[in-house]
Image: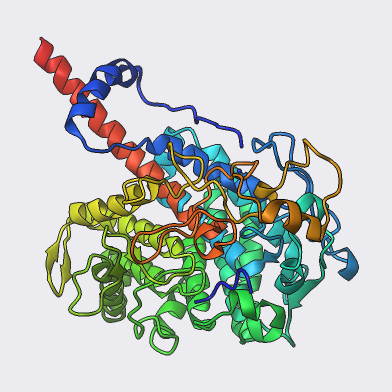
Length: 526
């Protein structure tokens, strides 16, 4: 089965708020930089492009301000058979199923990034696009949560979807919708969707307080539903098992939901949940060296670590310290500084968790490392690993090395972020991108016709899926740019989501350095 996943065309530059001084000075420094650095990447360009990808993945009625012009309306009858409006949301990857769990995780990560790096994203001129990407997801979740104990989990099913190679605008596959409810629980899906809506409620708190309140209301209901009616969603929605099975179970998602609800409400009940369930739900039991749409422990542990610095949480210091030691296990394993339990790496230094869509683990790791580096810097602390003490700069430098590998600093000299740089994957495993745009050819393209005329074509995709982060190279840094090589050439929304914030952070650092160098030049010239 093609995308069994366990184990976008217009160029846009954000309007930057960098002082005019930088712009005048940058030309001189650019020439200077060419001779002094091996490879510098335009993180601002990467940031702008990463946000375009979410527009290419939109399901539903495409808005007037859509920048990815090769896409058009699709899935306009989603939910109709079940008597519910499920139009909207995101296709998770190269097919047209709307999977609730990875979609919610995508929105949680976009929201967390916006919370941590709000100013950096705003300075880059991309805050509005980031918020649009989040809201496209949360608008759908509001629709999908039709009553306190009912959440629509999926639209379409992978098996029938994969028989067809069609543009989303031509879809003829089943659009049956599947739900979780009291009799068919799904605590993992309810917990992750609660986390997404709670995190997004923080994002919209100042600019759209009514919407923020609405999201929080849904988040609290979903968390209560997930907690009260416990069970794994893939047991209730069997069709998801071959695609997004919840291998880690639901305990991490319930802790994750509680974490984001506490951050959104400051209600101690949610904090008490994190403390009281820390042991029984594995929060302080699991040492994990991956963070993904399925396994949330490392991120929960990292966020819990931050509470240690707050006076009001001192009485729970012992539990929080245990959370922190597990978070540091994850960070140290990425840095190759644990005694024996480290994340594998390719010869060129890319983190390598598994062959199927490995880049998701890389982008998530880059995000967690960046956030933890900032935490250590802001609290004037260092990280103690088995193999020595590490400062915040070393952690950030490693995170940057992973991002730079993605952007082209690798043995293939290829950017794995589509549309960025001179060389990037041209045959991304993606139905819509691989077939002539509906805008150019409105003639219907059927199931098998797509396979016959487009899937097997050696030609590059007619539409560039800008900002998509593909699955990436194998354990030996090799990459084969072929449409059928879906393990490497398929991209997913949750691959790109954590990079938005990291690109903004790295751009901010570059701009600060540029400003410092400019000032030094000005002082030297007087």
